[in-house]
Length: 118
Image (cartoon, rainbow, N blue to C red; front, side):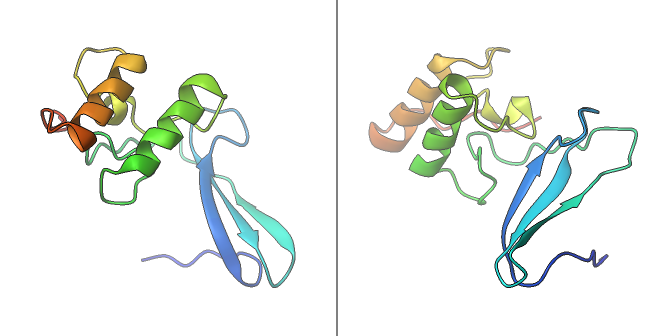
């Protein structure tokens, strides 16, 4: 484990590509120091994780908040997924509204479970 310095009282963490190099960087909102910390990832290779299809927000479970984040990504220019395969719930090779339908079907209509990550 590695500790990285951030401001005082970090309350929110976000992974995003701050410097445009296609590699996710870490941003924290620090409540006690009233500032934001940005940790630039200096790796040459993007970090790709695919753990649980449909778990868009990486909470470890597949729930309605993942659907909300997915809608933000597709229609409101929200944060992209860390791994596109992770949100391709129907394993069609495309990320689209049909994946949202698949997620809703699974969560609320006893539809098929998302296809396991490769």
